[in-house]
Every structure is written in structure tokens, then in C-alpha cells.
Length: 294
Ligand code: PRT
Ligand code: ZN
Picture (cartoon, rainbow, N blue to C red):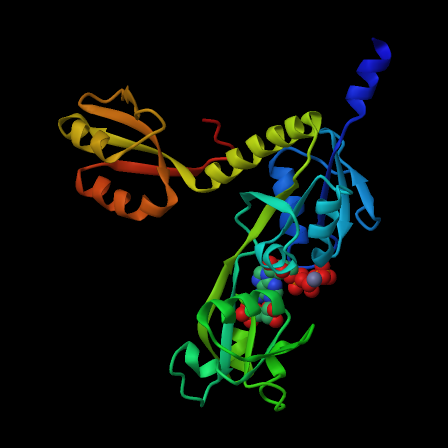
């Protein structure tokens, strides 16, 4: 019995994240927000969580899908762009809300663009030959793919290619290289991927982690709002507020007024605030939410 218990306690979920680069800091931050502390040793290949059965592997992002498919890691945080390019047998389980970018076609700014047909017979430089190949096939376009691993954006300028397909976030890299974005092929963000043969114990640990991640994501998309409402307009004001079930209403010390508490979604936030003010709401306080457990 004792033996059995200690074996169960030793099972850890093995998570692969990027060792360094654009996704590293946000990956660690998300774990922190999930209440998971990582022991020091970030510069090593591995680290342990101190308060959750989790072991971290620090890898190049390109290698994460393979490690997860092979079961060396159980799960990974990696860009969708990498997942689709590598085509490993793994499952995207959750979008993580950071590392947002798009994989786009771009051509030289002075060129006339007449739709995807522009690419026919042209040379396209990219680090994403698989995704670009699939895209061209789907569109029925014959073009030459020239795979390069870095500084794709300089290819047209030096006569190496007619077009490029690369990741874009602000667009300033394209702009500075005299290029213009013509077509978005893929919208991407960091995702949690999992091995397809997780055992029950690790699947349970993953469920616990996912529950935390989802609570953190929900909280980020919502704000807690407190306001004072004149009682004569209370029903109208309550009608504007969704709340988790329905808004909380408490009487104020001052006759004829109530305090109303609720939760608002980021997307409809400003719209609703304006309507609340128009309905006579005063002293509106908006507070960030740390976790949201439904
Ligand atoms: O060493 P390792 O192989 O792990 O890292 P890496 O150099 O391959 O990847 P890294 O750290 O550059 O990016 C990791 C992941 O971040 C990518 O796979 C994407 O999922 C995500 N991501 C988000 C981005 C960008 N935004 C991004 N803007 N990855 C790269 N870029 C590059 C892009 O390639 C181009 O050079 O930034 C430039 C464009 O940015 P803007 O802002 O000028 O448009
Ligand atoms: Zn990489």
C-alpha cells in the first residue's frame, strides 16, 4: 500500500516549453498565473514545479511537436504555426492567448497584386514549406517554394524570390524591407498540445492544469464592475449587466440608491459603460479579476 502510494505521488506531467525566444516568458507567466512555481534552474534542460506535479523541459520550439508525439514530453506550449508545419500526431487541446501572429504572403511594394494567381510560376521564400505547399495545392497554383530558415524578408530584395511567406505581427519587418502583405494564410497563437496516448494519471493532471488555464483566460477577458445606481433606474441598469448569474444589488446608506456589482466581458466593455452612464450610473469602479471559477 505504501509502495503504491509513493509511486502514484511520483507521477509528473512533463511539459515542454520554448527554451528562449518569443514564447518563453509568456509560457512561464501563464504557469505562474496558474499558481505553479518553477524551481530555479531555468538555464538547464529541465526544471521542476515546486507546488504541482509538473516537470518542465526547455526546448527549441521546432522540436516540441516531435517530443510530444514521441511521449518524451506529455504536453507542450508551442505556436500553432509550428504544429501545422510539423504535422505530428499530437492534439491541440487549448489555445493559450499569447504569441499571436499570422502567417502571410508578401510581395514587393511596387508590384501589382491581382489575387492569389499572382503567385503562379513564381518563387516563394519561406520557413514554412509544408503549410505553403498545402495552401498552393488547395488554390491549384503551381509555384516554386524556396525554403530558407531565417531572414526570409530580405529574399525579394536580393532577387532570391518573388514573394515570401512569413510570420507577421506588427508588420514593421515587412514595411522596413519594402514589402506588402497580400494574403493571410494562417492566424496563429500559442497552443497547448498533448500526446495522443496519455495514461489516466497524466490525463488527470492535465485536466487539473487545463482547469487552471481556463480560469486564468476567463479572468483576463472579464472585469469586475461596481457602480452606484439610482433606484428609479435600477431595473434598466441591471438589464445592461449580465453578471455570472445575475448582478448583486445592495442598498446604499443613502436613501434611493443601490450598489450594483457584476462581471463584464472585455469585448462589450466600453459599449456597456456608456449605456450605464446614460442610465444614471455613478461612481463606476472597474477592477481586474485574477481568477474566474465557473
Ligand atoms: O530558438 P527557437 O527555434 O526556439 O525560436 P525561433 O527563433 O524559431 O522562434 P521565435 O522565438 O522567433 O518565435 C517563436 C514563436 O512565436 C513563433 O513560432 C510564433 O508562433 C510566435 N510569434 C509571434 C512570432 C512572431 N509573433 C513574430 N513576429 N514569431 C516570429 N515573428 C517574427 C517574424 O518571423 C518576422 O521576422 O517577427 C518578425 C515580424 O514581426 P513584425 O512585428 O515586424 O511584423
Ligand atoms: Zn524555432
